[in-house]
Length: 210
Figure 1 (cartoon, one colour):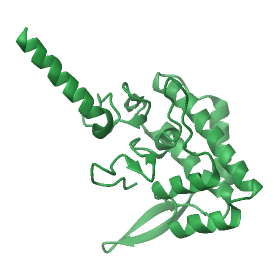
Figure 2: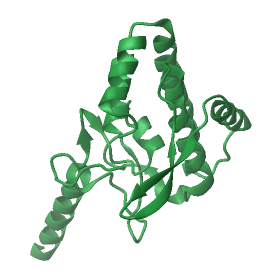
Figure 3: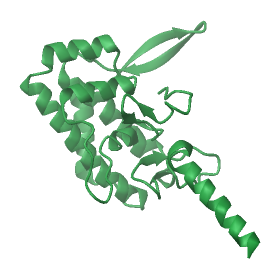
Figure 4: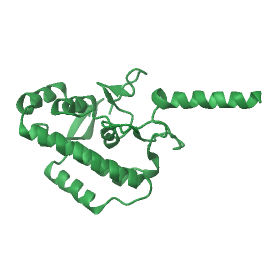
């Protein structure tokens, strides 16, 4: 997923935080959980469609069509509730998983059922004179939006090193550490990394002056 190249948009897109380096972790960050009160960034179906566009999972025309056809429907409301419920289930599992716990069998069954009902598909895409096989999903009905979310969670649990998945030590964001050493404890340079580096520099300077 392309998250931009400038400092202004590398972490934020359309009002959503994209620094997880993995779709499931970006989904968790749509409800930041500070000590005071969680902040819900997906209160309704239209906000969900904006997030899918920002994540480059839907084209603007697809989002507009889903909003036009389903925006006020019961199915749209049920879908946003289902996605928020899935997000919180995954949050609990990921926190336990980060600390060495096994994924609960009921969560595995839920993900398998979602992937059965809302499968990802494969298509060929041409670029730079070469063909590539890419994943995609049907975006004709609200429930179809569950497909990439379930698939991403399955990929996270099956293929990602849990030791590199963590919650920022200085804020509320979850992220996958893709650094070479794998010892990063802050979410991004723009949000917390600079603050930590400045604090470390100031501490070293104080030590030299003692």
